[in-house]
Amino acid sequence: MLKKICKMEEENKPKHFIRQIIAEDIARGLAPSAVHTRFPPEPNGCLHIGHAKAFCLDFGMALENGGKCNLRFDDTNPDKEETRFVDAIREDVHWLGFDWEDREYFASDYFDKLYSLAEELIIAGKAYVCTLSPEEFKEYRGVPGKPGKPSPWRDRPPEESLDLFRRMRAGEFDEGQYVLRAKIDMSSPNLHMRDPAIYRIKKAGHHRTGDKWCIYPMYDFAHCLCDAIEGITHSLCTLEFEVHRPLYDWFIENTSISKSLKVRPRQYEFARLNLSYTMMSKRKLQQLVAEKIVDGWDDPRMPTLSAMRRRGYTPDAIKNFCETIGVTKFNSLTDLALLEHCLRQDLNKKAMRRMAVFDPLEVEISNWEDGKVDMLDAVNNPEDESAGTRKVPFTKRIYIERSDFMENAPKKFFRLTPQNEVRLRYAYIIKCESAVKDADGNILKLICRIDPQSRGGNAPDGRKIKGTIHWVSADYALKAKAALYENLFTREDMSNLPEGSDFKDFLNPNSVSVKEILIEPSLADAKPGDPIQFERNAYFTPDSKANGGDIVFNRTVTLKDSYSPQAK
Image (cartoon, rainbow, N blue to C red):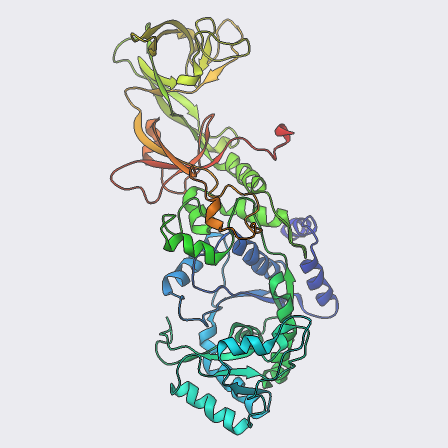
């Protein structure tokens, strides 16, 4: 039965082109369990929602076929890579429910092997040490549509290049003085094939190898050879690497590693995620953090997974979103509202309902005894009967939302007025008797009566009550703060900025505001990550970084859903 259910689930998944490619490979004889992918992040920052799309695909394709997925850190650039980012990446991947078991690797694990493969290319006359400066390198490489010029050092004898390369490794030269280049085709229409650099001098300490190396392989050289070493079958990456694919294949074909391969690694490209009102460039996110425009990588306004976790996003919502948007070969802009729709769908099933008042108006119950407390049953989640109920205290003084009362209300205002009764959520039917005002006519509090026979909110005589409002006990309510987050950017498409503009020109000055609120006492035990719906308001979660004794709730997402059937 379990196998049948799993098969049905697989059949209901979108048949995107990566699934189709793998299915065709299996049809040609590749064992499903032999499907081997990898997720290769660079540990120079925290992962964002775009990376989640990538590694959901990497791990997902392996899991669907009973194969394997490696976690491999691309640590070939020591300038910005740090162990703290390695730890953060591990946490994010695990948070979304994926496990690489014992297959955690680093490009730096293979530095010795990569170095020996580079020497192979030199000895075979397929690589040479070049003395061009970085500026000259760009000039000689040329531009699309026009062939490049061969370096004056292109025909340097292999013996001389090998000697220089070994001296580069020994630390004899300054940064930029020499690079090792692959000898391919300076007339190729693909600029990446015009004798690309494969090793450069970089005298920087490495987070794992320390000062052992002062030369480091370039990404294109290391990436494909690491794939081959690990037995990767399907190297999945975003579309900007499509032009790198011939180089990927060249390195594998022209080194001895190709002789030991059981299955040749193949690179396949898909469109990266572009999300409306969201900056997806890691370099620019780094800039926001460095310039303290945001409060770190986990600032709840950021698109990083650590920020989304702090804000209250759930792993299931993110994975459902990644599956919903699918995998294509075409760049497009995905509406942030779709991600929020997936989040609401998940939170609606999981979030505990609680009451919180954002703009309190005091209500005194005239026919309630001083000191009397009625502990009422309140449903935790109407979507989940197993969530049970909780107790909420009802007392002589309560608070309601100021917007839930009007003296002179329009016809379709179904909340509290001098003429209209309303139902207090889980409590009683209430009727306003009078309003206490200050000298300027501002309402200070209401004097109301409850129907004692309506405990639980139902009228004993069957009269219809159209409105239901939330409330908290004035005697038992806790003070808290609500951090109300909006989009960090005001421009819809942050991937396509006007010429001459800076991405910071589109920062939203009102991306966060903090509101003092009153919450029901059961929220005293809420923990960061707990999904909570403040009834009639929004979804929230306690902030994991609240300090100074404050109780702070981060707004995860509002209740309004432009993608919901009701909104249509």
